[in-house]
Length: 227
Image 1 (cartoon, rainbow, N blue to C red):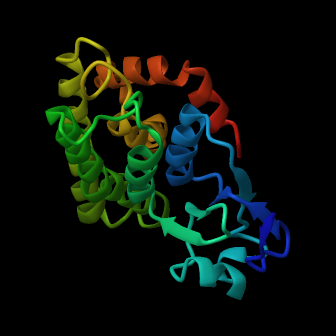
Image 2: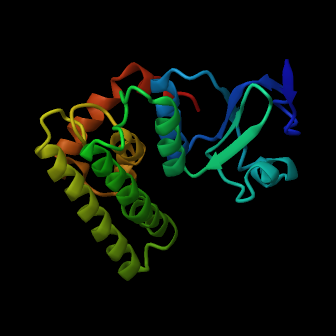
C-alpha cells in the first residue's frame, strides 16, 4: 500500500493508484468530466474554489499546476509516482490515448478520422472557444465597444456555421465518423451555452439537434450534473 500526499488540505493523502480530477463548474471542466464518465474510470473529484478561498492560487495547488487553473488531473501509479496534466484539449487527447484502447469515444492514429477529430479539437481551442469567451466578455463588460463585440460575434457565428454545415452532412449525427468522439466532447459544453451570448441559436438547427442527442447519453448527463 502506497499513499501519496500532495498537501491538499481537503483530500489527501490518497492510496495509489488513482486519478485525481481538479475542476470547477466550468465548460472546460465539463469536457473532461464527460470523457472520464464515458470511459468508466474511477477518479477522485476535487472541486476547486476560485471565488471565495481562491484555492487555485494556494501553494499546494500551484505545485501541481503552476498556471493555477482547472481542469487538472493527477495520475498516481501503483508505486506512487505521479504525473500531472492540465488544459482541457490536452487532457482529452491524453485520456483517449491511454484509456480508450478500443476507440469507442475517439479514433486511433492510423484511422484518417483521428486527424479530423484532432483538427476539430484544435479548431475549438484556437478559434471557437476564444471567440465565444470574448463575445460573452464584451457583451457583459464592455457592450459599448461595438467594434470588438461585432468582430468576435461575427467570428463566433462563422465558427458555429462551420459546425452546423458539418453536422448537416453527417449520417451519424456526430461531428466525426460514426460515433461520439473528442470532437463532440470538446464542443458540447460551449454549444450548450451559446444562447448566453445573445446569438439566435435557432439558426444552427443541426447544432441544436446534435446537442439534444448527445446530452441524452447517460454518462454525459451525469458529467454535466457533477458541479
